[in-house]
Length: 346
Image (cartoon, rainbow, N blue to C red; front, side, top):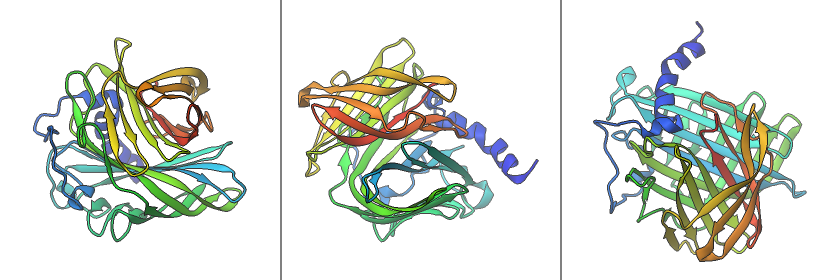
């Protein structure tokens, strides 16, 4: 067995349990649990929370080149824990993995990395901010000014990000409820990054710029046992408003939903279960399964009734834990661009 195969054999059972979507409803005895009325502490909370079972730093970006051609970019660092707490060296219970992807209208590129905590191979430092795994890194003097670099055999990117607005908090001041039973996470975002840099693709290097959105979330049991996956939308409208909305699919065929309306100045309005809806309009055969790639998204309280369509229907993350993630176009009552993530489609 080679080193990579050995590491995968060791890490995948942990990753599958912690981030395997339905597995996020597993019991989490011994881990800390999110509670209402959180008090965030920055910059410390940009860093890791090892007493919680699962956490991520999740960046997506809608990009264009000088000719107006669209691209999408994703970079995500995940932390999951065998046990709460941290320790030095190989005794650390923390496991890290990361995904990087680029989407064009014709192709989708994706790759992943795995690491154990405690040995310096991966981690997050709050100030100055640095999130890394091997040579991949999202870092800067603070959370507002960052660079991002990642590479794979068939693609790479080197980007600069500058925040143009404040952090925003989802749910009740960052306490984001995910089920009728009360499972929840701590969840905030920086959806106001301007991003620019270069994509290196098989056909060559291309200069791009656009808008990026970074999600921060941590919990120990964010789903209930009756939930099998989610459909998550981050939409930026041409008028400057933004919308985060998700529906969590219940095993009985119903949905649990939540949404946040984000004004251009960063003011937020949270919407509870039932206020937001997302209904598939078309499916495509993706990696041997039927996956919704065009949606009707509605938030009547804001007169939102839009069609959200994948730029590339085949944006399948064919990784150790497979899911769909890609850029979308928004038309209808509002127009714009965004990102869509769909998990649990077996």
